[in-house]
Image (cartoon, rainbow over all chains, first blue to last red; front, top):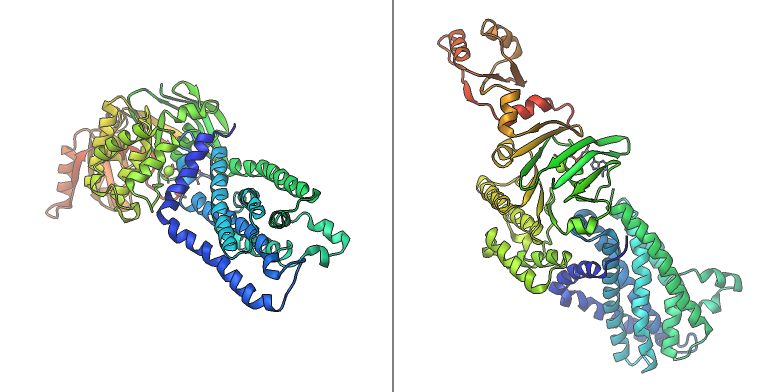
Length: 255
Length: 307
Ligand SMILES: Nc1ncnc2c1ncn2[C@@H]1O[C@H](COP(=O)(O)OP(=O)(O)OP(=O)(O)O)[C@@H](O)[C@H]1O
Ligand SMILES: [Mg+2]
């Protein structure tokens, strides 16, 4: 069985049709969040931490937070929202009475999560840019990174959501997976200054580390070989997760 | 045959939900699948439209093996699920549009089809109201309309009228007949025997994953039970004494205090009971035997096996 793109787009359009009704209310919080970060850090914390990783603390943080926004944008969609569609709304049961197949549903949902992640990450970037924290034009390179980050986290979330028996387990996903990632992936402090050589290698498995490093490179406008490794990680890991998520969607949607 | 299921079984863990079932639905008929809760009706339907894979057996729909031609077969059929699946935030028109896209219908064609269905199911008055504000009857009509968006040749309806008021049921029956008149094959399940008797050209009665009887409703009733039914209250102790000397009865059925007797001519029995009761006349119901009697006589009146 293979994915049919038109059918995947039909799944995507279902979600888009619902989003269209409430997009303004949905998008507003995406604007507020970066504003609060910038105020709290710029006015508050930034006064105590004057410099980090060679720049002001706020400039150090800004590109990483764009990646975090992309991660969160995708994660909410493929966790609670997908689970509700799966078990409570039974939307997939209805789709499977039509020529849509499980792989199309997976593709459509991932595509939608990437879309949400791009909206989320994109608005964050706009606010950061308006605050004068995004050096132009080099920081624009972060824009293609946002959907890539969204893709990775959409697939991780899908692989998880399709395997859990109850909605309660999402609190573990958020508190034991996303939150530690957020705190320990080099968003708030440079790992290379705090970890020993051995631990730095271990940290390379963290999925958020790579988008964060790429976003910083984009903002700085300088590339090194590490960029290639980070991109390879994003694409390679996404590929592996597609295999995992496909198996999950088959098992969950057909019996 | 539009549907030809040969010896299909479905096992969930160590539970056999469907057991070596054979089912043939001829083109243009309305076929009713009846059976108590948990009989395996929904599981059978799911295997026919290919979401549940049979543990054994083969299913041909429109002559094609469903396991190998899933997309092609599904594009020619429509399914109304047992529970409504609607997008509550969206209006009926938007729901129809979303569903039409699942079938890859083009914009112009889809708009035309939506108009037809809004007309057919009398959804016009609330066509632009979010589904969450609609009544149960309205939602069910919409759910059925969704399954017709692709002009299916086979419509599968899982309990289409459960929980609806008499007027809505009547309206839906007439729509189902309209479909059938236009050449559509209908496969439905129902717990309402009056519905099955009125709508279905053929019925199959399922119990414990097997078909235990099958045929044209009127013929089934005539061949398995007698023409008339006498129904009244009496406890088992009284029953023996009351019916002693009233003649031999081919079938009787009891549920709690209620007893039903099936016989070709009820006159003798009624007179006998009246004499027994003397002046004290108990309430007797005399009526034609119906599909419900047959159903109960085949599947039993006890709730013990209900899971
Ligand atoms: N996915 C599943 N996993 C395990 N058991 C299942 C599954 N689906 C159905 N069953 C079991 O199979 C049996 C048949 O269920 P099914 O839903 O087909 O019955 P039904 O005839 O449609 O009943 P109802 O009239 O209540 O809708 C039941 O005992 C049910 O518990
Ligand atoms: Mg059922």
